[in-house]
Length: 99
Image (cartoon, rainbow, N blue to C red):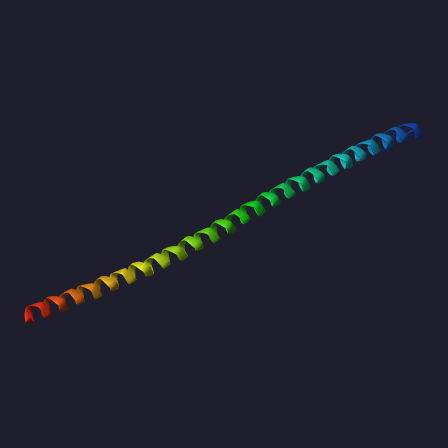
């Protein structure tokens, strides 16, 4: 089977077209790489912002929990004071009955 003869000019034309296609593909790849990097950077910045906000909210919640614990202790103190007052009232009542 004989191959058709190919002229130097037609090889040059095909080579030039191939080089143009390779250049276009390379340019498109570079553009897509750039867009991907920019998108990844934006996504990273958004994730950092969300993480920072979550950390701030967790700190705020820890503060609220600490305050609730303090209030709970104060209520326990008030309850104990109420018990002491009740004991004093009982003692006074007992002493009044004795007198």
